Length: 399
Image (cartoon, rainbow, N blue to C red):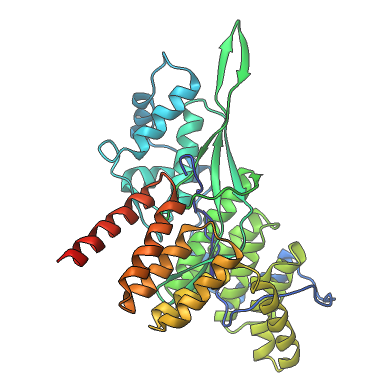
């Protein structure tokens, strides 16, 4: 399983990625504490990846640096005659306006601020980093936030991706009689799925964002099988922010891929020490136990994980999507229905039902669930997509 973190303009986005690949799916309750813990010094073993030192890691400041062209873009986007709130909206409008900035979402494009501007394609973390850098250059008070969402998975290239979620909060100010007064917050969020949900958020500092950036780079390199290069990034991610459990998780994965199971175990335990309810770390730990003749311990962990995840609607969505991939449409519908019974708000659940029913040839049910998906999506881009699909469906019916 691969974990990713993410960011929106007036809604939620996905951006930073943490790689977590689990051999099996499950969940966990409170387990017996382990006596073995790990520190960064203990877990790092460069001898497992002898070529890692050949790969330079970009300095943190370079991740947020803007080119002269990008700075000019910011200057040209905002009007000095407007309030900061108006200036923020101007800047965001220019970033999102394809006529001005042909911005494309690309899941594997982990780039720094300048590269994102020049390439005009990036994932959500990279877009959020670029927007933060532009907002700061314009003099705005910009802050990163992590949204507290349940485990949320997507599928990509045969892997299951565990997504995190970040966005950007900007606090504009305006002046009255030389006194700065804070106006309402503006949330900037890049979500390729246009997920219209509201979650509690915790503020993140730049150190965590740098760690997430390194972590994403390492994740993509693991997918490509470039383990030495991946280790270089993941080691930097952990050293930059040892409290970032996602980096420990992916460090464990790269060790496991290299056959260093004792080091992988230590990395997973380090992640669990940070968050004892980190189900994906427990799951990866169980996979190590399975491979090191500790099957009973692994079985207990898998059973506990399964119990917890059964209460997570997004877990059932993941199972439903896997069933869709396998053309098991009745099974997919069963899992989507369970997801809806746990949380009837996400539009993706209803769209998934529509996908399953269209494969079964049940056009009335497809139309019914597409209509519900559109209603749940509210006034968003994805709602317009659902409306287009409904129009196409009606056209096919009338032929």
